[in-house]
Image (cartoon, rainbow over all chains, first blue to last red; front, side, top):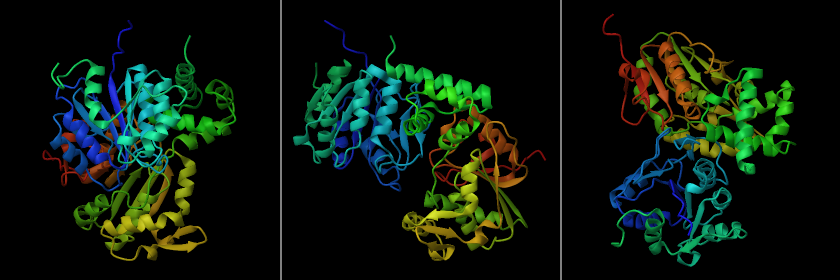
Length: 201
Length: 279
């Protein structure tokens, strides 16, 4: 048997329907979840940090907006700030950029996923959740190409199925590793990362 | 055997080393993820298949390098980006500026000039026209040329107007530009007190005796050592009681000159330099 890869981070891309999806996911993960989680939720440029504060109040994990040059820590969740792209430096630090929107989005899921794939290679889990556009497909393919793991929310389970459908289509050749309903995602993540006490083991 | 992606990483490191040795620009001090994105974007638009191929030309053909430089050092900005920042400047910084007979402002990394013109509009509305000089600088000479022309795309005007109104603007934003076909030409009076000039934060010196230094969303592209250098330059440039304005996701916490500065209100990212108590 081959050993499970030792993952270093989880990246999540999500758009419309995302507030409820993130609230359900982050509310269910255990406080001792072993990895940092980096998230791009599409959001308006003047939205402020209300979403981070809302999710933080609902989750046993620490949820905050990412700061530049921050070192991501296990059990912490970092949201891309409104009007900035979130990236990962090759040494694993977080970085922000005010470069042009990509596919009309800033923050963009592709920008986070592509830089995270370059930083973490096979030690990365990429997840696409509900959304009504195509952002994240290229990024998820990039994660697969660098040996990472690809998870997509079951389109039938997603409030807006376009983003999961586009991701599944983009990966056609290499195929998605897991297509799951949102409710099954916390347990899957805990199993993959080998720690935590979700659903009592 | 390395994968193509890994070889691509090696090629980028070699190119940055080569650029430093041949042209003296040190992009090894830039945050890597963004510079890589910009380089990869340039490569995709170029006729070269990879950076090994491009490097042979980039290191020998200066005009090609200049084009690369212009492409990878462009920072993106807009009129009244972060309206609440400009509102804070209007309400909490301008009252102090009005107490000086003449005000000097350094806008470091002004890119295509939108924020410099935004500041000019604000200062004009607050009655400071003719009583200030703004030095707007950037490493990238082609964006400076663009900035000095003061021409914007008409398609952006709706968004800029919204920003202007949220920032506490007192007039109609349309007063400040003339529409011509797909372009918006900014009023010449706004340009009168702005000096656009090249300046490289990595190697050039400070600007003396400034009342305000603005450097927003520029240092986010720099590694720690270059950030420290910038903050030292800004600190050396600012008069006691002067204001340092950073981007909304940049702060002075745990940074070099923080003990000499106080944020004027939480979250504004406007830091006032203390008066020297020993003087």
